[in-house]
Image (cartoon, rainbow, N blue to C red):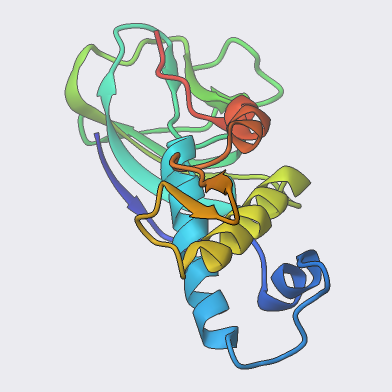
Length: 194
């Protein structure tokens, strides 16, 4: 699969929202540049962990043919399909008033070829489509806020697994993200098509 995202993804949150999450909220502007950098990094991390971007965007990708009438698209929910070509030949949109006429249609996850199949083989189908949530699910912003706050707090203990002080030992998270965030984001993670 080869692809190009035509739209640039936006950060999943902003500095003001992150600062408000702290208790007490951060009021100084001293670390705003650092927080912005962390927001960019954690937004990218979440998108990579999900295996897709959920922001509204336009995509053009050349995909492998499936040998049937259904071609799952890697970014969803699909909100529109503007072009489909098979082996370099343009496929028309399926006329809505003629349900059996040849052409392409789509649902939330795939493009369908009515009256034909996508021939099996590498890089035979090019699709341009729009996909994403508008607005984004709130859990994405909250996960980004919590990861940014975690990384911000970790910056003076990078590499520490635990620390002893006053007869007690404090252990630090050694995972890429807390289990609670992974569980909350799991429903949005891309699942490989069968």
